[in-house]
Amino acid sequence: MSPVLHFNMMRRGSRFGLMLSLVLAGLMVVSGGLDSSAGAWLAYLCLCAAVVFAIYQIPGSCGVQVGIDGISIRSPFWKQRLDWRNLKGFVLVDLNGDRPDPSPRRCWIGYLMSDSQREATSAESLRIFEPLGCDGLLPRVEDVDSSELVRLLNGVLRHQRGSVAGTED
Image 1: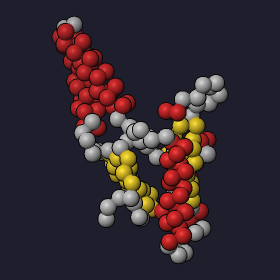
Image 2 (image 1 turned 45 degrees about the vertical axis):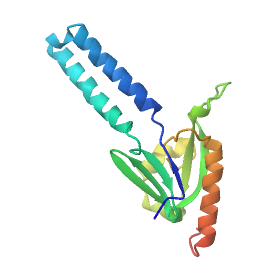
Image 3 (image 1 turned 90 degrees about the horizontal axis):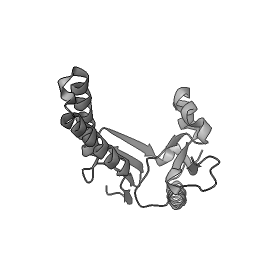
């Protein structure tokens, strides 16, 4: 089954992490910090972090797919599936706080679970996102306005609920 829509997850943060970890490891080598055990461990940790960040840069390794049955979120180290029947809607979560000049990069997409899914979810999981006014967050996607994506996802959810009988809560 092919996805209806496919979005790439944000990789800019992992690019920054890759560069920072390589620079720190390089500084340890150039400065002679490998002579101490703490310096060697720090360089080793920086190189391990660089490998993880590099894996995130592989094209197609991270993405959000919107399909007929729901949303699939894929990264190199985990996968998650959100079925339409378990979702109530999508909201824009503004993490800008009281800043006078809000940044669109700090706007995320939250999802609201159906009542039956909320009952099946642990209270601890729900408490994490409660202050944000949602039940979970979708990962950031590249080159898509979050408010436009919320509108689009709510439209797809309404369409899927209308085409499948008995899915409304």
